[in-house]
Amino acid sequence: MAYSTMIVEDEQRILTYMRNQLAAYPEFELQGCFDVPEEALAAFPALLPDLAFLDIQMPRMTGLALAEKLLRIKPDLKIVFLTAYEQYALDAFKVEAIDYILKPIGGDDIERVLRRLDKQLRPAAGTAVPAAARAEPMIRCLGTFEVIGRDGSPVRWPTKKTEELFAYFWMNKDRQIDKWALIDLLWPGSPENKGDRNLYTGIYRLKQVLQHLPAAFSIERGNFSYRFLGPDGLSDLEELRELANDREAVERRTERAMELFLGYRQPLFGSRSYSWSAPADAAVDEMTNRLGERLAEWWRRQGDADRERAVLKAIEARLREAE
Picture (tube, rainbow, N blue to C red):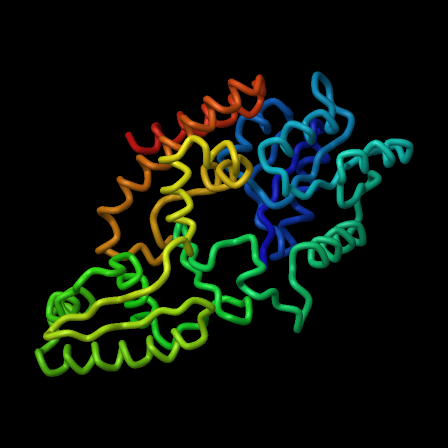
């Protein structure tokens, strides 16, 4: 597991040293290095890292002040403070930092941070959380693709085509799907007999996987057609749709709305980026921007200028990317 990371340190020499130190560890995925805290704050909504290393003593904005602003945007951000003076350690823990590092920084410090991150962010072996108890939806497809099984761990698909077949069925849930259209979509150019055999094998494998999911899915077979059945409300896409269309839902679940809005990156299904799912990207973008507008309005009414500004900057960044 790699932790997306940013560093904010006003001394260029130490910033370069920290960057080189972290580059030696594959567990850290460095997303940004900043020597000006205001620039880090402006870039943060687009990065949303798991971890931030922050210098405590910086001109114009201290690391403590910056941490408070970042945590308002991403409450689950993990923070490690960098300081030359041990007396600042107590201040560090006022904002629930996971650690502080006294300069000069050594390899032992980095190892200690990694151990604490692993303890907080990685589930212990043999203690998988049941899907029903997880905060995350069972199906995640906004910028990634992950389906959580009954044991609380991600499903391991027998083949890529089985995974794609589930994704297509789920996106077209409760609809009658023509058998030959499905074969042409997933196995284009296959001879009729081979395409038929591929689909039969794919559906058989998928049914085996469905037995290990916490929700009741089924596949109905008709005359040259299939229909995929299952409950609603299991995915982050459905959450996004609900929040984008319901102002009261945003007010009830503001933090989750912020997480979905700031965390979504195109395209649907992430690196899989199936050709048949591309037309849905525009609709999801429109929903995401509408949710952003609702969030900006909410924070404006609450008098929270920092969060309103973060949302508006994220909307602007999305619009620039779409140009």
